[in-house]
Structures are given as C-alpha cells and as structure tokens.
Image 1: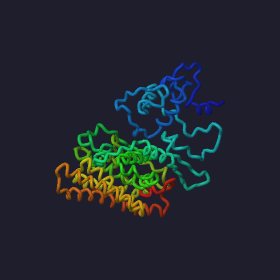
Image 2: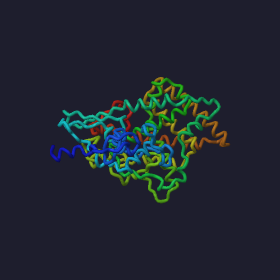
Image 3: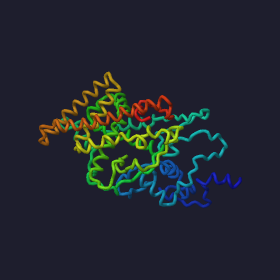
Image 4: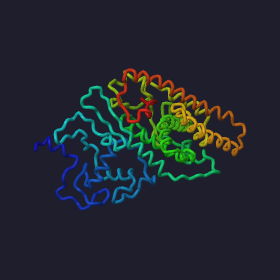
Length: 409
C-alpha cells in the first residue's frame, strides 16, 4: 500500500497493544480512534457530535460534571463530548470525502456525518448540475411525535393555562443576564441552520404539551398545526428574548439576536455560508438573506421594548400569533379549532389581569397586538421576496415537508 493510501486510514488506526478499557466510557477498547484509545461506540459518538453545530447541546446537570456511564447511552452528551476532547480526540482527523473502494465522489454524504444529527439527510442527484438537494425531515417529525406522546397529560381545570405554559417558556434570567454568559456564534452555514431548525421545532413541540386543550386534539391535527406554526412561533420567541436581553445592555447594538437561550449572534458581523442552498454568491442575493441584506426582522424589536411583556403576556403572544397564522394558512376545521384554543387562552389572560388587579388592560392588549402585527408585516414582506426567489429558482434545497419552509426559502 502506498503512503498516500495509508493516510486514508488516519481516522482509525489499529493499536498493536490496546489497553483493556476505553478511555471515555470504560468498556473494552477497539483501538485508536481520532487520536485516542476508545471503543467503537464512543468513536461513533464523537464523529456524530463533534463535527456538528453542538452549541445547542446542553449539560444534563448544568455543571459540566456528569458521570460517563459505561454503556454510553444514559450519559450527558455535553460531558461525554468534553471527555472525548480531554483524552485527545481530534476532529482534525475527520475525512468526510474518504473513498476506500474507489466509488464515485459525486454523492453528497448524509448530513448526519457532518452535524451528528440523523434527523436530516442531504442528497444530491449525481446526474444533475443544478445543485438541487433533498432534505428529509421524516425522522425529525417522528421525534416531535414522541415528545407529544411521552409528555403526561396533566389536566388542571383550575389552573391558568398561561401560567402553566409559562413554566415551560419564560423570560427568567434574561433581565439581569450579562453578555459574558452567552456564546457568540460567528458562523452560519448548513450545520448551524439544520441544528437550529431541529432545536426550534422541538422547542415549540414541548411548549405545546403544556397546553391541555391542545394535547386533547387528534395526533394528526396536532402535527399539522406544529408544521405550519413552528417557524413564526420561533421568530417571535427569539425576538422577545432578544429585546428583553438588549434592554438591560449598554454596549450592544440592535444587530444582536438570541438564537437559543444561551447563544447570541451579531448579524452585522458574522460569516454566512450559503453554498449549500444556492448557486448564486452572497453578494448577488444578499437582499434575500435575513441578517445580510434583509434587516426587516429587527423592526419588531422596538414594539417589544415598548411593551416589556410579562411571562404570561409573552406566552399569550406566542399562541396568538402562531395559531392565527396557522389558521389562515389551513382554513376549514383547523381555523375553527384555532379559534377555540385562542378563546381559552383569552379567558385565562383576562383571569391573569384580574388576579394582579389590572382591570383596565386594553392598552396592554393593544401593545401586544402591535408586536404581533409587526411580525406579520415582516413575514408578508418576506413572502414577497421569496416569491421572487422561487420565480428564478434561487434556492435549491427541496424538503420532504415543503409547507414547513414556505416562509424560509
């Protein structure tokens, strides 16, 4: 074998005298993987997770000191990845284009290889020159369905629904948060985009399990709502969190936005990779890319600052804008269901204001609707731009669930 060929196997080198145990989990080792002695399971875990946008992985205990169990299945992914790196495993040894049996290199590998997230599969037609990719979301939707099924149905007839939903999504900690407590994301490409889509879809799914009346719906109705409302729900959730955070900062500009609860991005200073979704350069289509040439989303922040919503108001706004948006897109029985759900929450919003002694709350409601209407206006302008993009086939990805991405690309 030539020297150049042997380099193809630098990811997994046979260890002539491997120790008994894996340096990560303690099970029997199978040689040197990515620069350290591990079992095959830990090597596979490192490949899946370390190469991806793992900024959304959270420590289970929160202190970065979780125990690494020997079976590797119940341990914290964050701490397991940390242990892998501590023992010398290096992503620099990854070779995504390795071709040991001389097959064609025109196939694009699964996105799971890149980001460690098997929910997304990316394919390319080897006979096509138009760079059309297919993104299969079926496994991600299966994960969402499991969340809906696994969460117990806790019916609390006398409990305010908005209080219950606020226990899942709230603004605690943001009002006093410092910039140093957030991770600054400086790159946005396919890895980060897929990772955020997964995070966002599953977040709204978990939130909806706290809404008793929604949980009583048929599974197909619940999933249909989620697929049509997840994007606008997450837009508002990010914007409100961003506004509350920025309100208490003195050295940040309005170009900052929170991507997740502990990750922040400066849209005026980040690297944007769009090669995965278009054949055009960033300069050519910047006006179609939010945060690059399209800054309309930031126009909603000022109305949010004027309102300064409470947790209950925040959750009502999320429900109102997302269910109303889904009802308009779906119509028919879905519109009727959405109207009934929103009536329940409106009654509980009234109860909330009564409890805190705010009897004349119409001004607060008007401000909330101003925020939501501002967001809808941004989405409307965004839709006009996307019509141009579709006319000229600017964005190449095709999705297994196209209705989920009509407002994105």
